[in-house]
Length: 255
Length: 287
Image 1 (cartoon, each protein chain N blue to C red):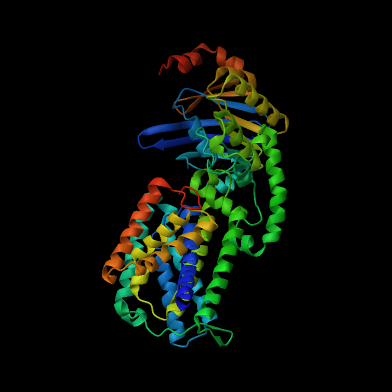
Image 2: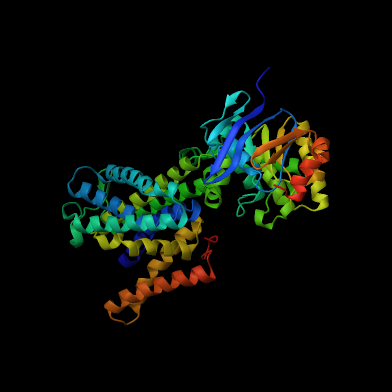
């Protein structure tokens, strides 16, 4: 059997006395939308932090396409093709939407001072192409007409779309989206679900933290149910949602 | 006429310093209060190299810039580990340390008495002795500095620094090297401050530690705040405006001892007023 696309094995993360993840193992298959669900504090965002290198697990490791991500910096992990969004967005609010996307584009001419100062024409030409790429990315998520708006003037829904545009700009093939649908109006919700499905049809693999069961049912190919830092169940959304024991944990808050 | 020339030359030296401070503090968000120390090191190096006739003005400026690049990277390194408020305190300590060295290392700096008799700059064998020639030198230097600053601001590097100021973690999450960019910004700011020091020393022909102490660092920050953070125009307006102030005070008939403290007082009030009511300065963005 060939190596899994993304495989986490035996992850353990300890914050002082708290075990955020314990013996947590799961796989994500290429080209699918996998939803990570579970009650608050289950460790969903911690998993994102471990995969993207922001947090070193006390035990266990993550492998992407058969290659261990152990010891790689967040920068290097983006280089392997994994990028994430944040639950609290973390956009650059004093920059325009276009600039937020431009920051995400990989390896640009003039990204260091020597090139910027001594090869201005080369940088300007390269920038022109990059701006078009960034505009196309914005167009892809439906924000083309907001390109020159400062982020702080965008609606919450637009800001969420912009976080997706920013990870797309990195060129990553595996996108980790932290609650892309939370806090959105019904209309915006349909928009983002359609976008996620479109990204899947374009060959992206998505790992999505999501609370809204309606969203999970509609987009997920596979659901990973996390409880107290441990993978409790995995399966189709219908199977997970119809499991009374899981529903009890999720909605009833039982220990 | 001489009076006007010396005002312009001095203001231009401070424009270079303003660019340095703006790049570091305004754009990259590395809140350094030790830029005057780096300025001083540049000034003392050029002064010593010219006074001992070790080399000409141009190579001396190069040496000063290189040393200040290394020095500024070194003193900025803590900002890569400690953030925000903690770095201000660290940087404050570095400034005090530098002032102590400037005052006490009498062999190198002449101590509190300063270094008199610094020779004028020479360019390819021509001594620049008149004020008009010196203004030309500072103007060309400042022109180059402004050009570099402008090019950086419109290049991806400028955008990356702005993004880093807002959210380092998010920058790392899109796969960019935060460390590398910060070190580059510190190096550039060091080169600007070091060459400003060299111009200052040769223009005045006398330097002493007072020009490079904490007050000077704060004056620099005031210039950037009043002129306008993060913009080229702000870095130019601030120094010209604030350096005009002492000249204006000389027209008012008050004793010189009072004038000096009145100036400090006005600088302080300006800093507070601008921070409270116009944080974007005259031509800038909110700090």
